Image 1 (spheres, rainbow, N blue to C red):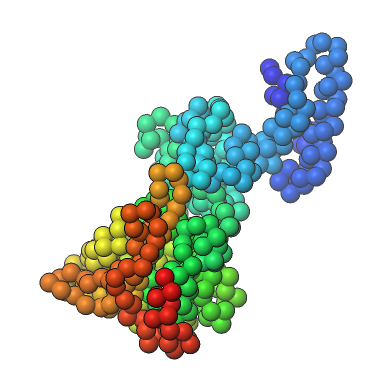
Image 2 (tube, rainbow, N blue to C red):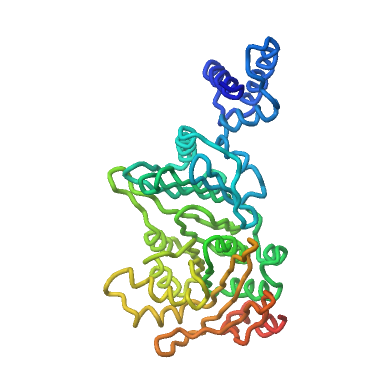
Length: 408
């Protein structure tokens, strides 16, 4: 038995004997660990026990095991790590600045099972053979996703996307180089004016980050309702209600899907509705909200602004056989004002790739688009040839859309 296992066992025994709760009594727990390590160090002088090595490393390992998430806690505490995922006991990966790397962290099968139990303890959600998927939010806002065998081949797959509260406004995106000042000024005015905005891009392109930044431009007086599968958005508005979906119970009842959240949001006197991620038929409910004159924003997986609009014209058809393209396509054209498309570059950086306006026209069943900003050959976001139809709404807030766009 290694020194860390002996110390961990002795600490656990003393914790039970003294009635200490490691999760709520961090300081007494840390003091107890120090006490056990000192005593163990003295006993190693007799030569009958394994040498413990660096006491600081030992202390951190035992403390993480008792108060955190064990071997992966050091990655969760690392501010440079954006995401942690486990493919198996010997395959623990992290992502830094959009680039993945394999870590030297190794877990046992029992440690993975215990990790899953700990991760879910505070979420109110479950995962088992009857429900092998779980999507949840950890207390710090990080997003958790777990898949169990036999959906996976042999080991559980665990993803933890850390909540990094670095971006609070469009100005922060300008500072990070993801957005130009001219484009940020235009988007800020569009949000204040109540434009309906769709944020698109591939996985990990920064869609949630962009939505958070756009939320920073929402006027403070507005009542904002957010609807998400799990909590990820952070809205600085004083009048903000956040809602997330709920899994069904063991009896298969009590499920609350995203469609229900969007419908309920409309009954809560919102000034603005934000849908965390549109995947299926809830796209119809978001369009209906927009069509009612309610400013709304949402995100969508897509390869380009054009493909995003095409996808928005097809997803609502999943809502039922009575929904047809003859209704959906002109509704998309008349409701969505702007598409902000993001790109994840090969070096891991995230950039706004294009900003497209949807002026409202439909030609031969295709929604017309106008490119407001696009990425040129050098990778820079530059002014496009199109113009925005938001002139009157932006003028109503005391700004001139021509000045904003021509500043680029």
